[in-house]
Length: 362
Image (cartoon, rainbow, N blue to C red; front, side, top):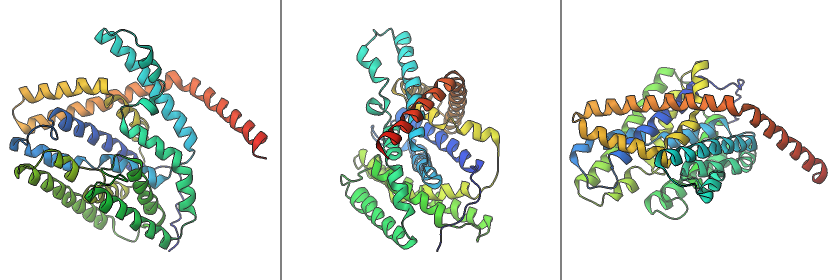
């Protein structure tokens, strides 16, 4: 089977919408994991609905990497520089906000670390995503020279490493999915979906039904594992290790199904594309340790004053939407403030690379 010929280079808004949904899922996930302490305190049957909800949310990070794999990471050095500039802008601003609000003394070491977000970041996703950016030219080159049969063999090998040696036996190669090995696996899956999976031969309704059903069933399996561990009074940490790790076969199947739900849509919307371009900024802002602490305190407070779980979840949803909107607006201001400086930096880097190629790569 030959790779599918994709004639349109413009990104459809369906997958851009998926980016925003993933960020929404991640924020709600953080609310119930950090605020409700699902993995760290004794299992509470009254929190059953949060374990079930988390089973539907846990696919967000995997979906985000699948999107990167589907499109393929091109111009990785530009993406790397852009991510670096975005991170240091927010890290430096957040650091000074912390000094102002908490009355801390200026610490030169912490300030310098703000300019090294990839090395000293407390955001594990950013660090691992940087690894993926750096490796993407090698991965793309390897994928380009693979036949479909060879590609399938590699996916089978990666599946064995991920599920058998990783998920089941928590081997060092991929114990929980929070690592570059899992990202490479998801990247390969995403590229395979782009190159070889043709959905046009099936009716959209059939794809939607199968995708939604698989997503729901996989999520319910995840929830069943989590609740089974809880009700059997097994070590609470096992819930995180067995039900919700990113390398769980059920989490990955659920993520792929959720991806297909949005892949099957076809529409263009400039507003969604405009908002989705700030997706990573939402994550950087919301999951920064300083800001996360305020969010967690808010969730704990809301849990103490709202005793109706449906109302509590509804409040979480509204709170998450407000955070997303605020982060997007902040990022658009940042873009306006830093656009000229970024363009000059790109020009300098291009001049340096051109000089290097002409001087050393003749």
